[in-house]
Length: 155
Image (cartoon, rainbow, N blue to C red; front, side):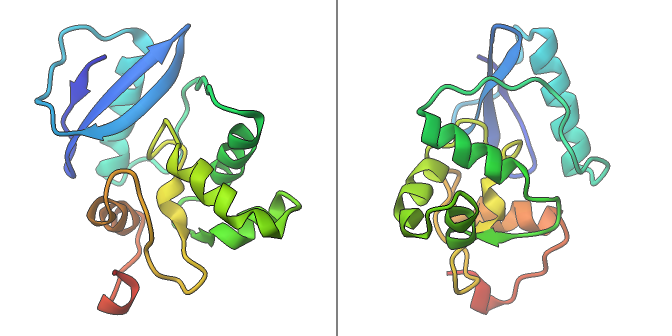
């Protein structure tokens, strides 16, 4: 599981059975010794994303997790580049508005950050809330996608 550098911090990427299975921020130092084809492609696509040359990721992904988590993650995957939604709207799209906390927990367990763009999910009031990579990274990712936040949107 190599660790790659990015403009907003080092990222540990992993694959399983020919699919990207993990992408998480880490404090570990970069270590690019062993990369398979999926991870090489992921690394290239992340570079293009941060350079503003890529809006959609195109690599096979493999998701572990419960059926509910996978449903939430697939809904998150539908959020277009440069757009945002809320936890409530996702729970409504899944047909259960009362499941907002469960949706939040599933999003918090997202194993493939950036590619499954949970950074595009905001609180109902439009504020940045919760992100496994930290709110500064969430803000930075949204800025990569063209959002210009004023102080009122960032807690």
